Image 1 (cartoon, rainbow, N blue to C red):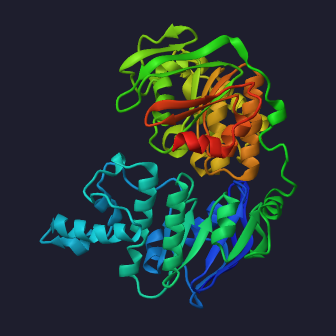
Image 2: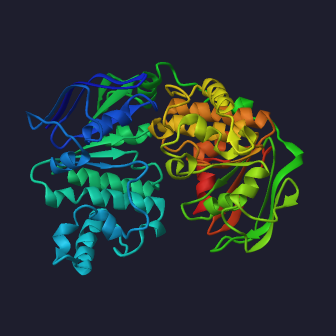
Image 3: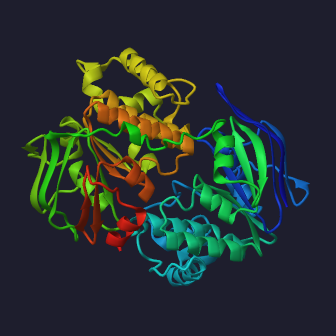
Length: 501
């Protein structure tokens, strides 16, 4: 029902898509995998009309089509659920669901909000999300917003005749196991009316849901794998062009930390909401991992250390000093770096280039008399591009156009180049491919070797166990269990889940 033939796309200094052939059958779920920078995102943008291809053909139901914009693609029944989400947070849920399609609720220039709310409830039922349609989107959890994003795309069912093509870009990246199973059930039910393109770095999920899997590398499709014909290791090998390192989390590089050097100390800290009596220390060279369910309070603890939340009780010290003024600026000046979960919203500035993003937190270092030393900024950026193997055409590349893994490397280099010796890593590998994850794990070990203290919110239990010296399980805003360095037996995922739940 949908086919791409010999698709080409070039950007200055980058040949993003090279003669790509891609096809989707009616009622089929097609997986799309590849390393960050392999061309997946560019291919997706061509499919939903954000980019026009430089060469090749696109056919829908056997007829050649050209989309000048995402509106053209939507009118043809092609919608997308974005990894970084396209919702406008200060609008209500129902306003987001029907954004651009309010005319059906408008009479004499006025919106019938009651009718919009009723229609939104019908869309939310499709994704089994029971929330008030008038609720402000910013008040939802990330997982809830992801389901609203899907509900928004599913309005195409009522608006378009014929079959749909729905693109899912990392839709499960922050969903719980139960939410993933719910989403997969919805996807399978909808194959009576729609075909899906499923992009994910979670290979087990790709294998579980997909009928066929396209593997991309360096802008090309290097293989098409039928369901049941490949293992996770086979696909990963094709993605990265080599066997994945068995020492995945670099556990042999995990060394004892300096117990005599405390960088961060929380003493019975309580935060607004239900986080209560949190106490722990982060030492030089230590990876301390917070494990807990969504909403357990772990993210709030991270943001409190960075000065984004003011404790209501207790003491928070950075290098032995209680901060007089709680703010991100004060934390950064004390050597704290923060890699946020939503890197496109809080980690980078879209529209600014690589060198501007890298030096954003250390402007005083590159200025004299109010004048920036841009040459020095560029030199630093080139050094870190080389050091971290950042895939960017140059230091002038727009950070918003880089792949997720390379954006994450820019965020990490921003803090490391400024000498931060306390790093707060909130889901640092979320949405990254296998190769980019290995790069981040290598950087974590390098930072520990340099005496950096790291607070980590891991993406998986295995990541927490593989990387951490110390694991703290948080449930309902309180510490439930600690697993300390030096224990004879490392905890298992079941051990962590037992204390979480």
